[in-house]
Image (cartoon, rainbow, N blue to C red; front, side):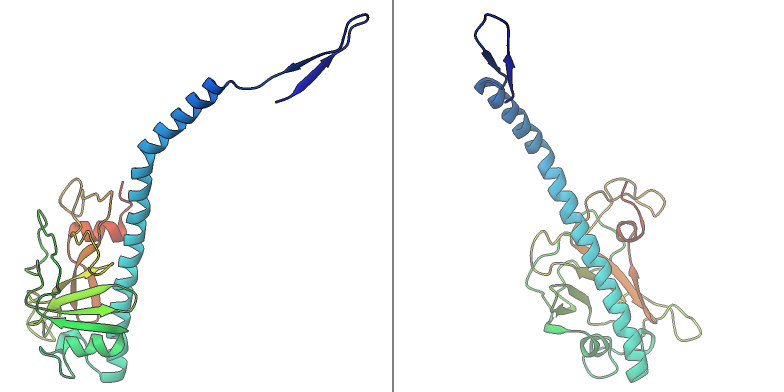
Length: 224
């Protein structure tokens, strides 16, 4: 590594060299490898979770903007929307205002794992849903029976049973697993450390919101 020249009267010049032995280098590399093996999975999960969270926020925002735009252009929102696919429906409001590349009615073609998750409706396999596939890879699926979705009793009857769906932030790619609490089960104590890709939502009037404590924690909480 470095060199030191030692000069003494009447003696030859000696050079001393400092460095690492092969054994020391191998041991150091071995330690680095063990530490990397232990930390990489956590780091990858954290990175993937952050990507899911960002896409989830983007999906919520895009849906909310779509219904707001629909009010401006077609003068109706979720509160007065009808079933089916014709103008005036939930389906038409979203499809006409978003970059939709594909739609399906019934099965989405992939399984949604909903084990241990409550308060998300009956969309598990989306067999009775309309499903919209957007050009950025995000999917939104909601019941074909969705209509008159209002939380304002002065507008209509408050019945949001069919006004729940889910955002899948990476479409048909795995894990296709509904987000759930790692600890706790209510808004006050639910913690999600590793967000997944499917998020239950509820929609009414001119808004789209998280439908479960886990989905709300990912959006509003710190995950700690």
